[in-house]
Amino acid sequence: MTSIAEGGPNSLQALEAQYGPNYRWLVITAAITGTFGQVLSSTTINVAIPEIMGTFGLGHDQAQWLATGFLAATTVCMLLAAWFTERFGFRATFIGAIVACEIGGFMGGFAPNEDVLIVARCLQGAASGIIQPMTMLLVFQVFPADRRGSAMGVFAIGTVLAPALGPTLAGMLMDQLSWRFVFFMATPFDFIGLLMAMVFIPGKLAATHRRFDWAGTILITLGVALLLVALSRGQRDGWLADNVLVYFLAASGVLVVFVAWQLHVAQPLINLRIFLNGRFAAAAFVSFVIGVALFGSTYLIPLFVQEVQGLTPTDAGLLLLPAGLAIGLSFPITGRLADLWPPYVLIYIGLGLSALSCLLLAGADANTGFWTLVLWTIFGRLGFAFIFPALGIGSLKVLPLHFLAQGSGIINFTRQLGGAFGVNLLASALIARSAFHAEGFTADQTADNQTMMELARQLQHLFARLGTPDIQQFPAAMQYIGRMIGAQANLLGYQDGFMILGITGIVAMVPAMLMITRPRRKVT
Image 1 (cartoon, one colour):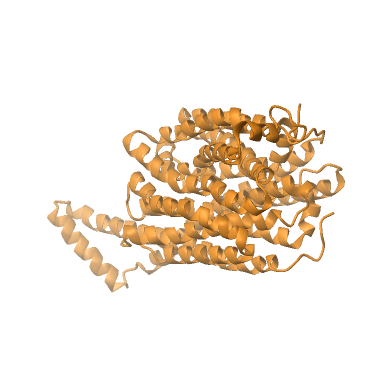
Image 2 (image 1 turned 120 degrees about the vertical axis):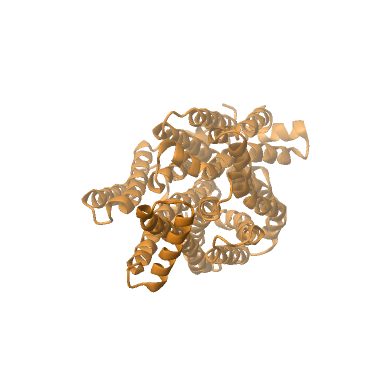
């Protein structure tokens, strides 16, 4: 196939000559449109989880796989993006990813059970994992060094604005139609992105014959899957249960073998030497934490306002809409700042805003005002607007040219890996902390607790006035008290979840300091 460098009809030079000086922005528009549809699929499901749980009779430990399965598939496939781009070119890879996402969407929309639903989510996640790092690499190919920050700021609209706006659109669809229609939301964007890709996206970078690391792909997929299953099962079966320990040991063994294989094979899936660059390694860790915060908060907020505050899916989505608009307006500005300021400055500002948002949400309860929650959510999304362009520029500019594709894939990989583990652990933490608080409340509800007994008597009188038979009044009162305890314990569980996210953002400021100084060793 003719390469871009050779000046063929699908080359960058030929397309620039055909469409003029604004061609670069046509490429970014095509990339944003396609990426928007892919990323839109990542978080729209969060608003629908309560209804899906009711439809199929799922618990939190099972329902979280709708988000975790997507993120896990995205995580693994991000490592494959570089090979697909080199082997098939930008255009073919972009189109293939969009088609795969649409197939997954139709599978999910017509899913007869939760197993098919999870498979559909994994397929959508795989498509998203291919397209995100590929488009990030495309930005670096078509824009000069002094304009990449601005381009990354514009491109980041598709990767962060979509998760912010998705829940709003999903909530409206659910209230008017059904949760199944949420799976078709990306179709218009995918269709437009597909048409634009056929015209504006260039072909291959250059002829390449790099072998695909099948063994590495299988090992990393198996290792991540086993680890996520272990974390999920740990909450249900107990962290010291035999099957959970087996999963942990198996995951550890597989991941150790994966590292050994990557160091041994001539053409690895991940060239681990890239982590010898200190600033890149720090950026990868910060990217992991950002994934935890972004996808974790996007998972918790819609559930919190529906389960604790009793809002409708539409209201839950609308709560995130102002934050989405704020981040959309901020990205061009923060992208330009990424060209002018050191990356670590913007990253520190972003981590501070993200941590502040989560710590404020940790104090929310059933009576917290709608617009107060909106404001606190905006703080967090503005933080991501500062982080994304700076992290993309700061992580890749320290690498030599031949490591750009690997670096792009790894940064996106670590962010999605953080999201997968973050959602999984937050779902487990929500169950564990809610049960902990419920146990503590229940232990105090004895006959010696005068406050509880007085409340029970008042409830008995209320049930008596409502015509409840005498023999049922006390059990009904105790059942109502139990529901109050459950609701309060659930609230405290959510508050603990937001607190975990806030502390995580603060902790991430420590490795972010490594991005200030030059690495001692360079990748060669």
